[in-house]
Length: 113
Image (cartoon, rainbow, N blue to C red; front, side, top):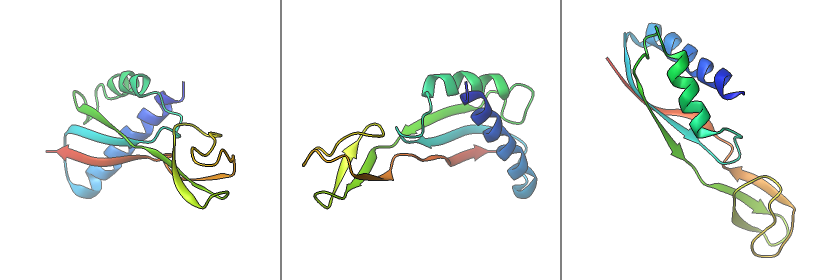
């Protein structure tokens, strides 16, 4: 399950930034995750709770903001919504889509002390 390594990476980033920005505790973390990032939100929540034990983020609340997926259709030259890779264009049926949004996985905001 790669959600464990993602959660570990988030905690590592929080610890690095605590030194740079001089905070000692993380109370709340907001993550933005697109549907194309291949991340199972509930698994990530479970892993986050596990890897934050005995760290500056122990007990921190994790909120996940679901972002929409979008792609540029080369066939009809429009932006279309997508929910997974290899979707077809909802307008023309083309599979020539270039993902423009939805593969993000980033920390949007932190509440720290």
